[in-house]
Each structure stands twice: as structure tokens, then as C-alpha cells.
Length: 194
Image (tube, rainbow, N blue to C red):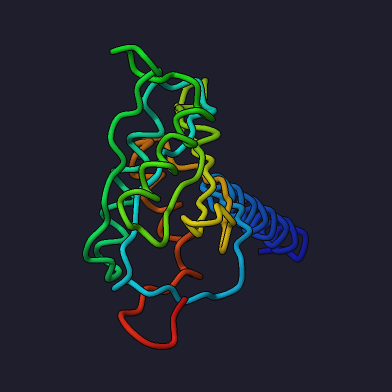
């Protein structure tokens, strides 16, 4: 084999290695996530907690309720044994459900104050969909907040977005995102917690 043939084979090998590396990087970035969260904070899981509505800013109906179900389960797994769920808010003087997101939150916060809850968890769903195109990757964006029920003050918050692979579900992607968002929120039972 001549020196020219060896050089040509080496350049083809190097080009193949570069292409493989670029494809690997593209595949890794396709399932990207971006997050910002408050500093590591411990909360007392033995205090009464209330689940408050997660506002749905997405185009998907009931995405907030789906996120609430995942969030509730993840918190129970992390040590929050008893959490009261808000009753379905109704329009004042009506038997119709309250559709105004802000009014739903305020009504639920009032309910939580009357129930004796000390801490509440709420948030928003900003994106809950499958991207358009051939692969239909799931895309989810959410925020989570822990609030002092008495004052309504936010004690801790986290926000993030995550995209998944074409074979994944939106709820599975949301589950992963919520796990990541809750990583800086610790549930302790007893002393040394808020």
C-alpha cells in the first residue's frame, strides 16, 4: 500500500470519527434540560401540608392536574406522608367550576388556611406537548414553589424545561423534570427543618 493510500484512509477514518462524535453530541443534546432552583432547603414533613393548584399556562387541557398527580407521588416518596389536596374551586354563587387560574389559587389558599395547613406546594405548567415533526419529542416546562400558607410568601422555588426522545411520553418527561426540580428540596420529619 502506498503512502498516498495510507494517508487517504487515515483522513477517512478521522472524518468518520468526527461525524460519529457530532452525531453523539447531537443525540445527547436532543434530550436537554434547563433548570434553576433555590438553594438546598429542608422542610418539615411532619407539619400539615396542602397541595395547591398548579396553574396551566400550556395549550394542553388538564396539564396542571397531571403535573399535580406526579408531584404528589414524588413528594410522598420523598417522605411527605400527609398532604391535603385542595377541593375543586367553584365560581362564587354558582355550581360551575372556577376556570380563572388566579382565582382558583386564591380560593385554594383560603381553604388551606382554614384547614390548618402550614406549608403549601404549587407551581405552573408552561409547556406540556409533543413537538411537531417526524419524531414528536415530548417537551415540558414547569415551575414548583413551596409557600407559607399563612402569609402566602414563597419559601423556595425551582423552574425548568426538558425535552425527551421520540419514544418517550410527556408524562414520563414531566416525571424526570419534577425529580430534577425537587432535588434541592429536602423533606425531613422533625427538627432542623422549616
